[in-house]
Image 1 (cartoon, rainbow, N blue to C red):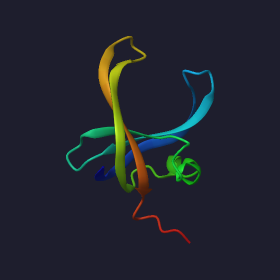
Image 2: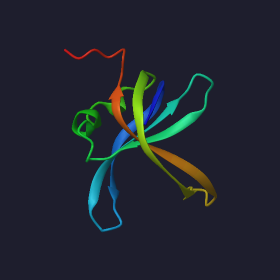
Image 3: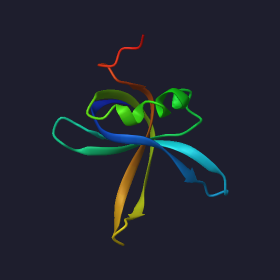
Image 4: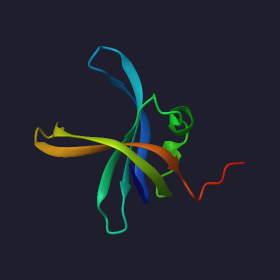
Amino acid sequence: MMQFSGTLKQGGAYEVSCKDGSKKVMISFTVADEIGNTFACQMWPDDQQHGQLSGVIASCRMQPVQFTVAGYTSRLRKFKDGKEQPQTNFVVTNVVFPNLQQA
C-alpha cells in the first residue's frame, strides 16, 4: 500500500449502478499533488470509514488530505463529449483531513 498526501479539489458521495443491477453509494474525489497532477479517488461501502466520510466529503474542498491507496483500476473511460481516454481510479482508505479536528 502507498501513502499519499495532497489537496482535495472536489468530492462527493454518489449513487451508482453496479453490474449486478444493485445500487451503491460511491465516494468519489479528486486530489491534486504539489505540482498539480490530479488523481481520481474512490471509496466503496465495504470500507469502515465510508459512512463517516460520505457525510463530510463535499464540504472538504481545498483541504489538505492524506490517505492510503489500497488498490486501483485502469480503463478506457468514455466522456460526455464522446471521447475515450485512459483513466486510473485509486481505491483509498484511511482518509484524514489534518486541518479538520474532530470534537
